[in-house]
Length: 469
Ligand SMILES: [Zn+2]
Image 1: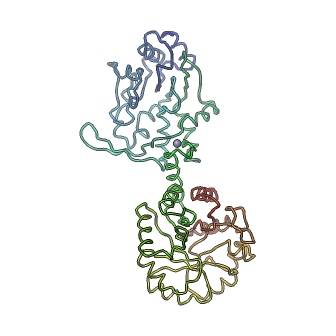
Image 2: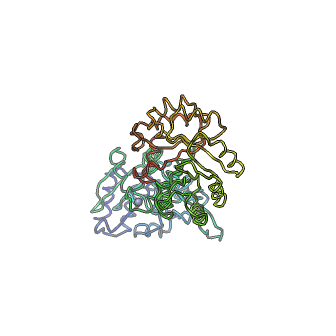
Image 3: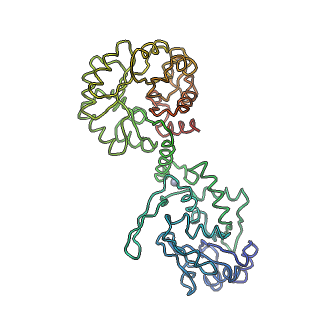
């Protein structure tokens, strides 16, 4: 191919006098071009004319096209060490100006957004969406929760932090079909190179809309991609932080050993763990040393303890309270029974928050005891279903548990007590979550130990987020 042929292709694509275009390219994809990169750069420049502007990113693996453009005497290079671009043409100065003063390398006040505002195009020449820097702009505009901060030393020696810096892997090639389907992108060929041309603003609008609904829109779902697993966890954590309630996950759901639990809780995006079973043992059977070590390990990984839960009424609560004291755990959950009044006094003295969970008792019975105590209540819908009640329509409403509730166990079960997947049993878990959210419930909702064997901590958290939706 020669310059004239390339120019004809570019015009056929719709590029015309006065256009702004950012080109991501691989010259090796085009096949032989007479005059090489210079001819290709000239073909673009002559197509868009003196009023047009040709831009190319000049970071990462520089291609010959980029190199050629950057080295022309009339080229302007943006002064930002991240996301740097070179430009030639009428708007080159405007596009490159003050890039490094922007808060982010790709968002507002950067060349990428200016190109969109000028009605400019993105041209992918022999490369795919993976190289499309304007997709970083979409992430930055959305301030996606998985984005980080990048510190960079500027030429003047000062350090500057850029917000919304993208992580290592995103599945940009996986979202190409969205632009294909909405008709906002042209695909064709110049020589052997597959060329994609789209209006920058169309690209930004399309994916901003998508990203508002699905913040994971450009992450891959390969479960072995550690980058995207981590980025998805950040999205879940951010989503849960929007709620008034705090989500906790039972240790028995998170795993068997502490490092495994920590890994799974982090992947889930969880901030709290409820200690019920550790290494196959009820947590309170662990020695104080061992439990303290576990609590410290959780803390080092930013995971807090929501409570320690007992599965039976203890004979000696003093021992348990001492264990909690020694390990820095402040909250204890024990089954509700008729004679728990003294536990309240003792735990108050020990400065431990105690709460009572319905276990093997009916709604009216539990309501009767609770009305005589000034105490916190953990609502286990599975247990009320097992007692033959409708946990929301009967137990919750009639027992007026809204007054005492400090925690809702997120779980589901059939009327015979068999645990079931969330929102597919008789525990009315959706209704319970919903009514508590209506009152800005700020206690815990805990993916209880009854969910063990029903899914990973991550899958269960994902399911909870779906229920919230
Ligand atoms: Zn990935």
